[in-house]
Length: 144
Image 1: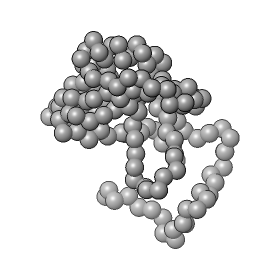
Image 2: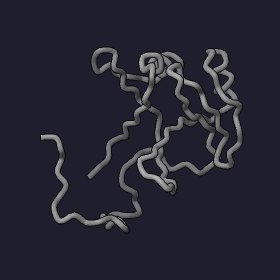
Image 3: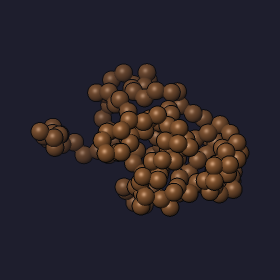
């Protein structure tokens, strides 16, 4: 099995305006899959799992090497940002999307994994997942 990518979703009360920000301000490459429904390419990504009292909570942050330059550029483009704050793991700002939602952008101070997903060189053999209940029947896709 090989994971070939990840798809993140930003829910918005004004999706068209938020898509325009990603297209015109961030200048992310994109495809139109019909009717103005844009899917954007993102820079290399990483994922972390944090402990929580609840499941099904997910967050999306964008990263930059120069948070102060990013905030200055957003100000020039009249995109509201919070003042950058050092969180220990990085310097964080939140932008307000045109649809009203917030999106975190930070300059990481933590170690970064190598670019590119896929299996780690450290575990050539599939391993059982601790705590995962093994099913007697194989999983089947809901797509037929």
